[in-house]
Image (cartoon, rainbow, N blue to C red):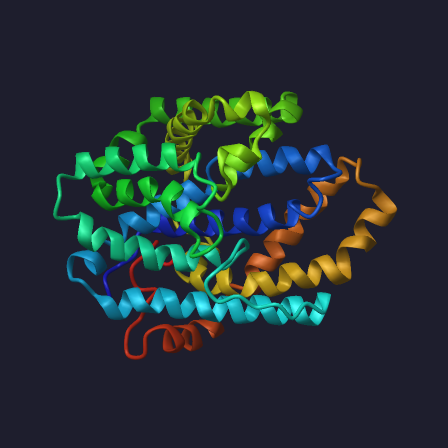
Length: 341
């Protein structure tokens, strides 16, 4: 038997994969629905930094042991998701284009894990504080480079690596103990409430920051008044997202729920959900927006249970063994919580 899993991290992973699904559903409607833009802003303020931070935190054994088989499994996962994504686009949108090493959509994260792990094997030999600061500085200035982009997912890898490395050098126990104190929980709840109110009342202005939140765009894709403040805005984004990740950990319950075991299977949910997202867009979306209209407040309220259903469909144990075999024959690639977030 493997080591006992900690419900806190599996609960958090399940909530994050649910937010991933909900964010992808919401993005269908962001061009026309202000309520969807609010939802998008709230989710994208912290969900990918949190996922990447947790992945870094639970990759220590893989990186320190230079487990290249496990690391290569992330590339296998990336190719698998690319194929699933291509099949969905072909079936529902009749698209045939396929590019193995360029990606702007869902599969990028698996390739990023592959790159993050290899980078950290090399960088761990240096002073971690210097590496973290250097990775932030590189990311701040990378926003002025139009050459970085979806090819090899370079822009996202550069922009999100500080969160991965921060997770890698973090001590789980030392991090959790202060965050679970009651006064900290109260502050965390207040911060998350303030974020929700901010995106509700300042949605129009904040949505201009979308290129910053996705991590794949240069500063030049933002409006002129924001582009000139690119470095300061990204630095603020790092600070705010880091605070929100801590708040999320603080507020995540530590006891087991019915969905807790599914938090150990987010890799399969991440891989499979892209097909269901495309199916939703092609077969279901118009039947919801038609009667309701894009301006209806009921739209986000309906999407939340739909996202939950998709997450649950993608998370049953029946998918676990096939994914384990495909990713690492003879090894359980989901054994380390968070690593495949």
